[in-house]
Length: 159
Image 1 (cartoon, rainbow, N blue to C red):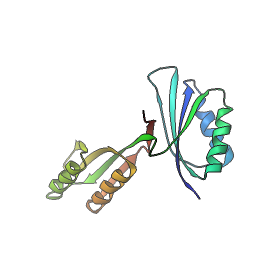
Image 2: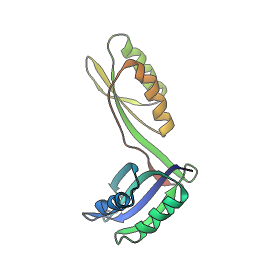
Image 3: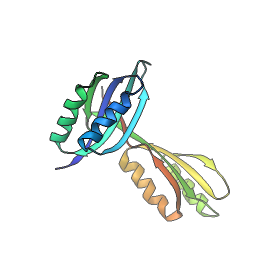
Image 4: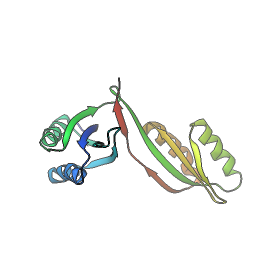
């Protein structure tokens, strides 16, 4: 049975490391649902957060192959129970006339922010779980989504 997994991969921060990690997924025919990469508190290290869909066997195979890469230091499979997970989403929504007030109320309910305003649109920024972000997206769709982007999950182990 396929389900979502999040892999937190701590790697040496060298040019080409991300390419090697992503290439491993590609060569094995595994699809990456989302990918986030950033330097950690130590500039010599980066954390790659990969969301993948598969079964336990596939995740086990990916993990074994990742451990063979020289630049990989640690791999952790994160679950909702063992980690704090968030994703960032930005939504540009039509906001003309009385719609603007309704959208601002929705933004307030979800404790999100408005990052940009012009005469036609509002750009909403929300950080939360996938479920929370999907919920605000569904509420804003009737107003007309002009453009949207989201990061996919990024996560840290609890404790």
